[in-house]
Image 1: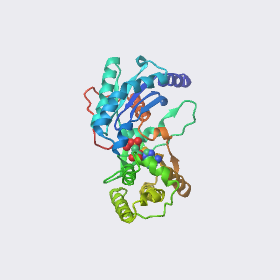
Image 2: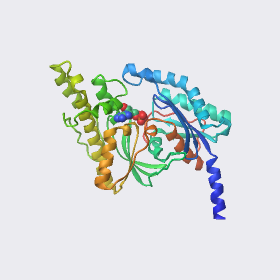
Image 3: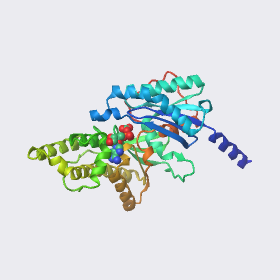
Image 4: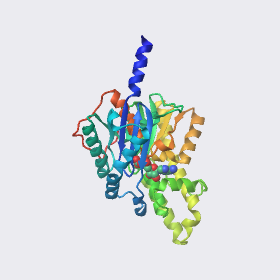
Length: 352
Ligand code: KG4
């Protein structure tokens, strides 16, 4: 009897297809999930922002308008399913750029209404954290048990979150000004390196000396972060150095990148360690775009070895903005029948 029930539950879960849509910033992404398994995860980036050294909200909304139909189409094709097979549509409701969000939210509403399927709203940050639960066909996967701590570091957020369940998350610490990714992007911008700066800093830092320069670190109580002082410290150091030598940045960009990156990683890891110690939690996950950073990943592994942490780092494709992370939350909410009404507006600001 027990085995038969288990069998039918499995059949039921494997027939839940969720289309997820993510459009909170400058990536238009659509994914199809079968249960917890991702069948497709298609993302169109927006090169248009590179020439401006940052995301231009108006241009981002327009690009989403152009991308959304082909991206959803490609996700359905790649997953090998028809839209009529979908059980629900999950979408990022916020936080993010309002114009960008509206494209995804409106598209999701229109498609859900035309198919007569429920809609599921997802918090973008919750998606980043739950990316650890996405499974891929034919691959071994280990998700963290609850509770765990997650360092969520992206272009817009830097938070330490205690995750008690997929819908019960407590912010233990967060940035009081800039996010870690924003600091990386700004550092690259003042060195004239292009956008997004994080991956460029990462690449250069691999060839540089992380101890070549020292920059000021914040003294913030508790588990909160601050990166604006570091940004200023970097800018002032650079100003002094280039005053006597126009070529300074070009000749020392590897060392500058490595030293800046090392300072960001030190700041992030220091508070994470303190939070882990204070809360007695040694299951530690990493998520958000900055989690792609090589030095941060290395520091995670070193801390794991030193302090006996069990660490979880998502695959690259699930760290930056993508729709599969929205789909996994969508699936859990589907099982809880946690659907939303048609009049749900997008929201640009708020945390978890
Ligand atoms: O999570 P994400 O894709 O978008 C937001 O929701 O913000 O994060 C984007 C951020 C950008 O600031 C980008 O520079 C940073 O993640 N980033 C990196 C790396 N790859 C992306 N920062 C450092 N090292 C990287 N390898």
